[in-house]
Image (cartoon, rainbow, N blue to C red; front, side):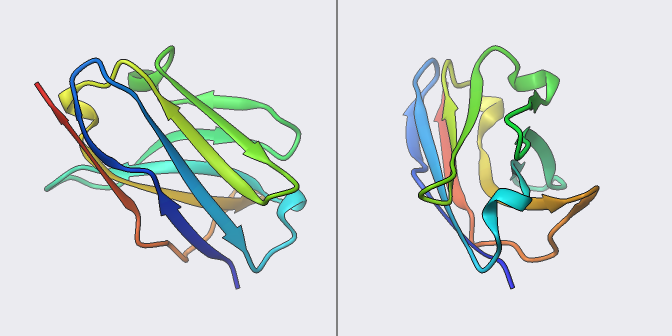
Amino acid sequence: QVQLVESGGGFVQSGGSLNLSCVVSGIVFRNFNTGWFRQAPGKERQFVARITSAGYRNYADSVKGRFRISRDEAKKMVYLQMNNLKPDDTAVYYCNVQYGHNWSNNWGQGTSVTVSS
């Protein structure tokens, strides 16, 4: 069963940067796509970014050009570099893994990002 542990969140001013990390265990990492989601207060969880096992990336329109997802196969980690942060980016960020079209039902505790204006 997959286990996901996110870190790297914090408080930052508008225009600042953060780099989130996620340690993945319990699966054969190279067989899974990986991604990031976020949940803002009072809102549903939404997709942010994905990187496939082959290295293909896609992003939500709201973060294109500002966020970059990457992964380290040897360390079984996923990263989200977030630049030019905006108050609307304030949320709890979660990583997840995808096999085929299905994202895991297991979620980590997430890491909180707060962007002040």
